[in-house]
Image (cartoon, rainbow, N blue to C red; front, side, top):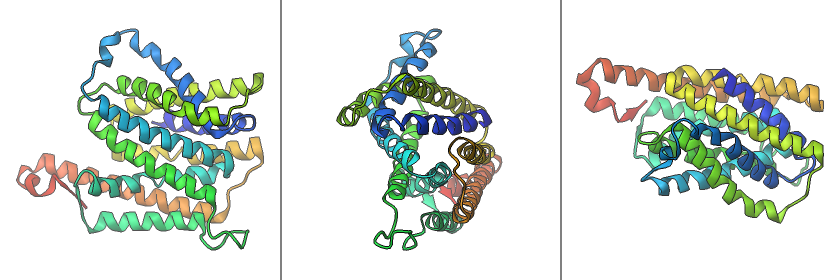
Length: 296
């Protein structure tokens, strides 16, 4: 999980270099295309049989929401300070909680809702509505795109929750790369620019880093508890801050620091609470009927 966090941070930096020459939409297409190429070796051992599925419709849902999330996130990474874009993306688990209620029908109780509300307060601190430098702009359009990316990512994760019940993690990576490549081609063609050699290097590197990071993350979630892994994922932020300062001279402002700390704290609380309820369900069967479908 630590490797995944660091690699995703480095991918954000490589993407920033790439979008100096191409649009965020074109970068998204090449990230998916090169990601697919780098993921194909996963088929060497199991063969094409790994791709047999009865859940292709769900893969399309995952692919659509994943594509929208990727394009919105890439737009944010290209137009916002990197630390700010990454911090807003940490609101994804908060949207997952809302989606779990609206889509999965899960029951969320008061303490978890309180953590979600606190987390969104952190998002508002980062976005600073009404406090933009441009007095005619109530909130940054780029920040709204970043927030939309987090919401679409939450929908994508909910689809993964269904897929993980029957599908191989490697199959999910390959299908996702293939579907997102096709779906991201149209917006890429509308904003197409041929990069030079340096641009190609950064685009290929973006796809390579993203694919390895995705594989590391799926392996981590297979091997360990989510509650233990989520805090490790936040290593991404200091890595991004350091790289953004070194490569682009970007610094992180006080509002982003405060908001990020609040969001991270809310996410960690939610993960720990879910883990505690899961352990109670396993170790005390008598409470399973009342607790197993509820989160606090």
